[in-house]
Image (cartoon, rainbow, N blue to C red):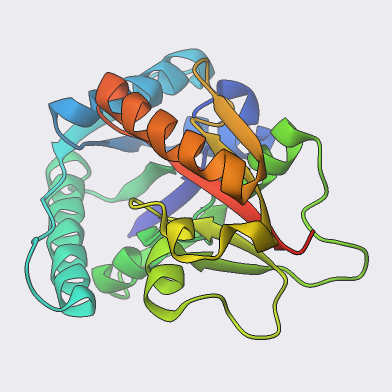
Length: 247
């Protein structure tokens, strides 16, 4: 029997790990670490550093190369095929390193339940794999903490969405506040900037954390320029932002 533990590790800062996450890491027989290419090697280095700091007993660590997602095709179809390929690699690594069963852990950026596909991939592993989840600090929590703001207005709702949704469908009806994740193209450029305030953050909780805020008409161009420079410098970027309409 294989037990798979999906452990939310926050946004790269070891201080973001909960005591439950640390216990789960130390209870594992195997920790799998993904390698996403040289351009994103810092992500692997951060996971290695977390293991080195948090493990208090010997735990086997296996690194594996993440498959690339196809650039062409229907988005959902491409992602589903990519998830199939990842699941196959997970099973290959588990069979190689835990042939007699045991507990395997995956360190999931942020929280496994929010715009992360680890749970969907894990479902492909079949009934012989038991799954548990350890929640982690999300980039949304890190964003509002860094800016010292509340996520919602008094008694007001907040919509969490993606850059693709904002770009393709525009501002959602009957919503005044949205959090935008997974936005590689600064989808806020599609809005009329004079109606919005933005709070943006990249590499949240990390040494090179970057923040910007203000009226979208003023802060938007700055964010676009800084984001491009940071991505070129580090080879990768993870960012998130809160938009408020007529704030």
